[in-house]
Image 1 (cartoon, rainbow, N blue to C red):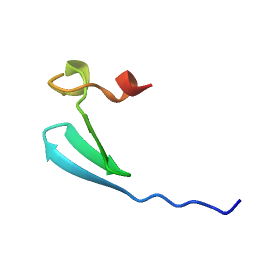
Image 2 (cartoon, rainbow, N blue to C red):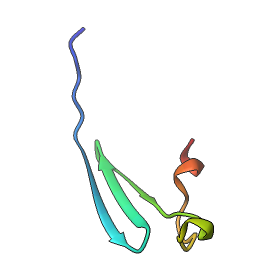
Image 3 (tube, helix red, strand yellow):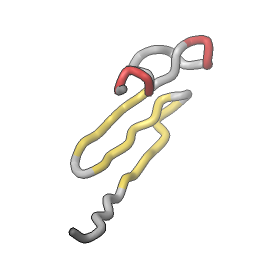
Image 4 (cartoon, helix red, strand yellow):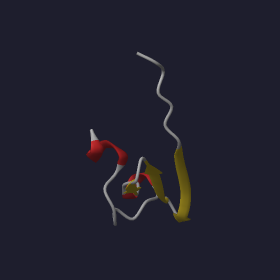
Length: 48
C-alpha cells in the first residue's frame, strides 16, 4: 500500500476563530473565553 498525502488549508476568520478545510470537509473552531475566544464555535477539544 502506498503513502497517501492529504492537503489541508487553514484560514483565519477573525479574533481566535479559524476554519480548516481538508478533503472537502470544513472545520471551524474558536477558543474558550479564558484563552481570549468568544465560544461562538466548538473549541478544538470538542472535536476529540
